Image (cartoon, rainbow, N blue to C red; front, side, top):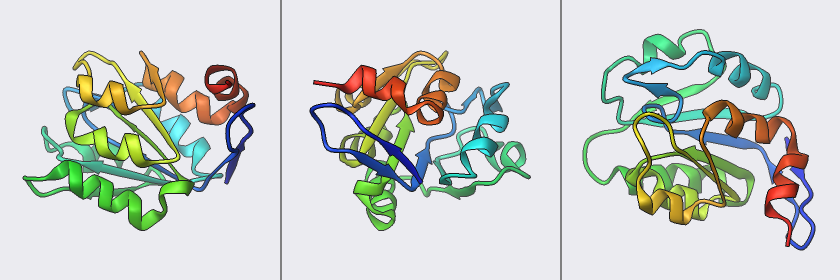
Length: 156
């Protein structure tokens, strides 16, 4: 579990990390350098879940051996499927990272929503519903590894 104390805001106790794959952890289906190491480090404190449409069909291969649970979503209503998965884990105990329109609901409802803007871009809906926006997945993951960065960004 990761505890984040944010002045002027309720403290966060994060047990789960839910991530999108394409456009978040990967570009063109290829896992970005440094992501695997950071996921492995975070897995000592959090349960890591990857929810994806798996556009390029490579998520399973690239995540093999990493300490995370992969769920490939069926076509249709993926935004709702992601939200329901986060609800099952517990909204108040979950941080989410994503970039797509199908990530917007989980980003908004989770205890912490982080949108990322990588080569694929980010849906405006995701940006508007996130608590924090990063231009690097490594920076987004490092926010959880160094919670004082979140406190500096989210304090009132």
